[in-house]
Image 1 (cartoon, rainbow, N blue to C red):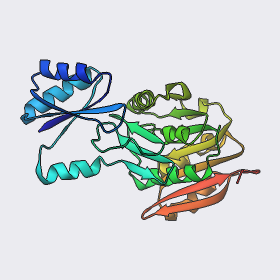
Image 2: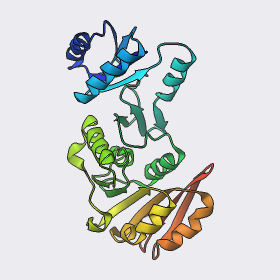
Image 3: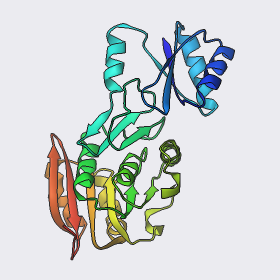
Image 4: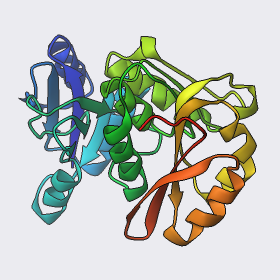
Length: 273
């Protein structure tokens, strides 16, 4: 088993020294971009790999374990490949060894939360934002998970994001990921109830599933600015018409599907094209 650590060019020597203190003997350094360094600590048994990675995480370092060789390692590397959305945006796990210095609009994600951009429901919303974000918008992310949607919106030109989630670990992950990407000053993540969030927002995204959308529908609709738009995902194509009915008086302006998943776009009067 190996331990893989994501760090910066400035901190890599300190990380290697700390790994040595913890008993890791063989450390290789990979430079997937100018700023990112990935340290791979090899030749560990499963217990030692788990101990070292857990200790580093407790100290605030991004550290994970991975297989050392064979088919399992090949699968792990495939899973950590960057996800590229056209020529404007890409999402990559911070501990990925894959080169990313030339990737467009890069967002890196650390540990925790939910959502990497890989799931079809997340991809559908990202694709909608790529088509519709004009710049300087204020966006509300309902059920932020890892913060990936809000962070992608900022990379696309949105001015500010308010992100809410019931789970404290999702809020903490969103804050960490904002810091990882140098975007902490443009995103406000909290466990505040949706009914307490003040608008108006030019864009609202909610990748939370049908039951949550139906339960939260009035508070999802309320803070949308005139001319703004709403993206709902985490639903299936047959659920779109039913879900749209709960979001009255907004009207459907678009629908995108990917296999068993769908994203529904809605707006009120005066929606911007």
